[in-house]
Image 1: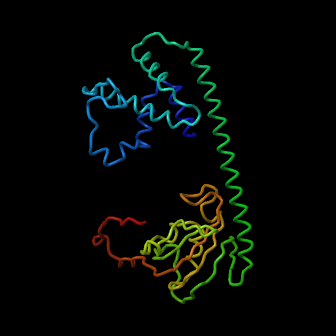
Image 2: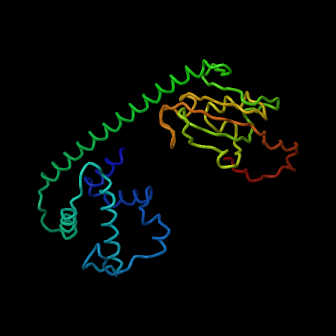
Length: 284
């Protein structure tokens, strides 16, 4: 569900408000909770400039303030309406003291229905824009790969993966069960760097089958000691979902240097009495 709709549902379903806030805080801590400086410097118990006349000394007072702050932080992120703080406080006070509501049930339901419709329309527009962006990236990827595939020295496999040998070698070729050590430099087709062990100055080890499909294919035909440039179609990369700085539908370019096969040798065979159970090492 869209973040805006989750926030709206928290408002409309008042009976589950606190549960929604607890879940929200676990999944997405507020700045105050995640800031080490803020955590090491507790707020003063007395009123501050943002809460004149308010005393925060007892547990009930602090919890009440915390609930109010969480509510305010949650709904302030909703782009579909502007929070009226005075109206919000009036509603909290009315509900907390069980006093007569200024709005009747029908008026509140009508308001919630209207804002929900606005949020759904906004979510639909966001989804359409995202789909259009992915389609645009796919079109750019297709054009790039057609042009690139026609260059001298570029080989295109049956899956659509393209590669260019920058440094040839005659070392061993990894199997699907191997772990390898590589240096790589990853960019979008426009040259934007999204990840690079070269820039970090440290190669990386990982299982051959623990990476994107384009890499899995290339590593099993690439000799140790060689350096290739891979041109990865979206279907062999991160597809329409993208990842981090990689937009959905994008083709990817990698310079990959296969440094070594680092798979640990198989242990010697042993009888049942000689076998020891050891902790399985973590893999990246």
